[in-house]
Amino acid sequence: MKLFDPHVHMTSRTTDDYQAMAAAGIAAIVEPAFWLGQPRTHVGTFEDYFLSLLGWERFRASQFGIRHYTTLAINPREANDPALVDGVLAMLPAYLEKDGVVAVGEIGYDDMTTAEDDCFAKQLELARQHGLPALIHLPHRDKKRGCERTLALVKDTKFPPELTLVDHNTEETLPLTLDSGCWAGHSIYPHTKMDEPRMVALVQRYGAERIIVNSAADWGVSDPLKVPKTRDAMRAAGITEDALHTIFWTNPCAFFAQSGRLVEVDVPIAVDQRQLHEGNSVLRGQTPRVDGQG
Amino acid sequence: MAVLRVLAALSEPSRFVELAVDACRTNVRDVFDAIALDNDFYARHVPDAAYFQMVVKALFVEAPLARIVGLADRTTPELVRMVRAFASERRAAGRTVPDDVMLVHGVTE
Image 1 (tube, rainbow over the protein chains, first blue to last red):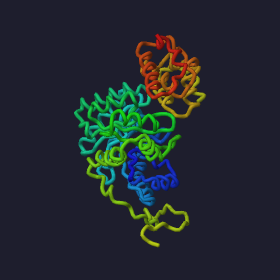
Image 2 (cartoon, rainbow over the protein chains, first blue to last red):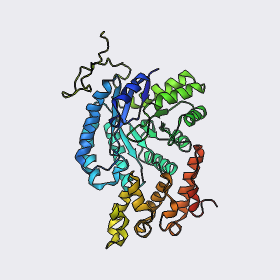
Image 3 (cartoon, rainbow over the protein chains, first blue to last red):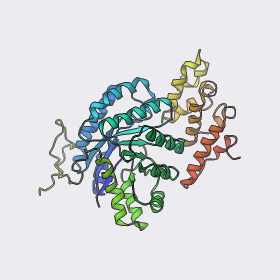
Image 4 (spheres, helix red, strand yellow):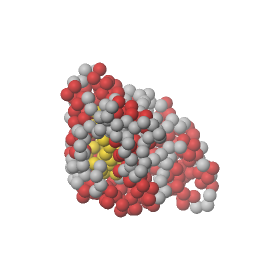
């Protein structure tokens, strides 16, 4: 079974992770732009970050047989820094036109400040102007209120719910998200946001329609194999293969395909580690893996 | 971190509200503790919305609420709602609720 991890921050992960993910069946990933663990101090660092998501990281994934797509935005935390917001918002339109950009994201709320309101609404408008879906991060603190405020903003701005993926849902936010017509993402984390048994229970209760599961693995304690592990837990609980295929492949494909840029997601990559990206290889003198030869 | 601890003692401390709120967004625990715990800057100068976010973040990272200055005086029905919502989310997830939620007056009534 092919698997899709529709939210994983590979820039923070190792080549061992790529190898393990590919071996576990992960064939496609979406890497949203987010904050990097400490605040950035220049607009230009966002530009280099976007370029690496579109260039080097996409290449790196391909070297391990994984299709890499990205979503670009200024994230909710850094939306509170007035020295960054205007510059990043001015730069974004050019980058939203690039191949491989399948949504605007992660946008949404962190502290639920008025600065976040403004940045969120402006980026939803950018998504509309560029014909892209939106990937929305729910806040960790006061999450249910944050979800209500998020869904109200989506409704008030008349952004189409079918183009909206609300991520990091919990037991208390999932019914709100599903009722709104938006897609519902779940980040499976060791011990916190959501875990495998809780995700099994949610699917048993709400079914597979518009349900999406991701690892949200990043630079913190997280696990880039949470998508296959959650699939295994669902299978062990008797959830049908049809439903598994829907949740772990069809749904993320259907959502991000609305961008028109989820190209060749169904086509396996023939790995050729002799390839270079701007003269650089992922290898350190090892023998290149070349699929289809010897 | 040292400067965060003495913000309230500097002249015109209200200049530093944005700095303090920004410091609270950190994921570096020592920085968070420096501004949130045993420090009267938040109690004296930071508006409710940001003060409440700090309290809920303290619950998230399991920083002791007993060391937050001014908690009883700054507690309003909105903070009580937020802390109850935090406890409800934890229970819905089958996770434990930290005992410190009871330090917010009104949460258990």
